[in-house]
Length: 88
Image (cartoon, rainbow, N blue to C red):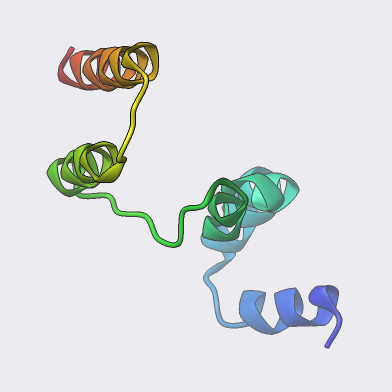
């Protein structure tokens, strides 16, 4: 089924304010927002639980058999920068 007709099916069930929001804000960027964009980077799922996300990253780093020190340091630096920004 054409994407346009699927969108029409969904918008028929949504409230007008949400439909306006979706069309004006989300629809033009949907190809960048979907979880399917993560698959290209080897990620199969995502979470909004920050501690779960942090633990997942640490587990993946721990699972590497050989990790160059610069990659490990850069990964941990970016993690700490992200979480510091979230706290601020």
